[in-house]
Image (cartoon, rainbow, N blue to C red; front, top):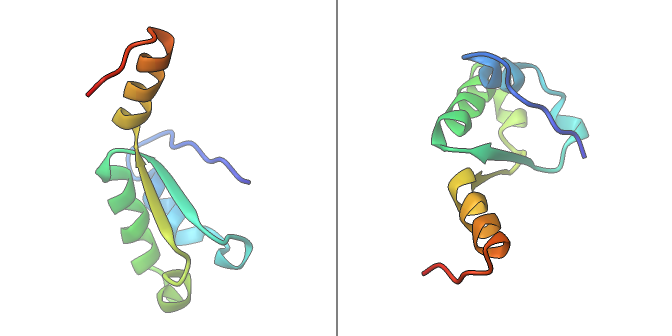
Length: 79
């Protein structure tokens, strides 16, 4: 498991351009859709993009995690 946080605008694009796809079985983005688009744009900008794009990508929208944690913390069911 490797966790990488972004520190500046375009950082996820840089990660998509440079990650060693042979070392990963999946890429999971914990964010809104902007980070996902940056990672995909970075992957498509690579010379070996066809190989890099074989790594599955998952997105976990942060708002769902916030709602889940909120409902557990306050012991409330949110519909």
